[in-house]
Image (cartoon, rainbow, N blue to C red):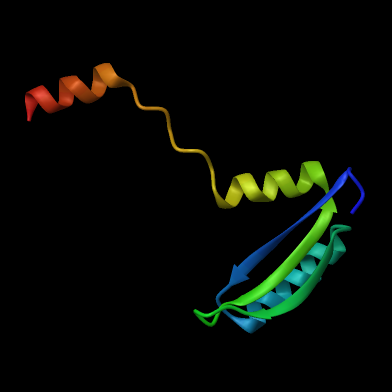
Length: 80
């Protein structure tokens, strides 16, 4: 794969939703195709495109956890 491109496989609960997602993604200029189903029965959609766009999709699916403010955490624990 081209270094400026990346891909991700996303599980989608319903086949209709997966097909709609594929249509929308293609309209946005990305490559999207149905890959099959996973063990939980979700439909797997492979999305490919510019690395930056795929990184945004990855981030939206798995945002990093909020940083913990230890002072707030400790103060809340003391009050409890």
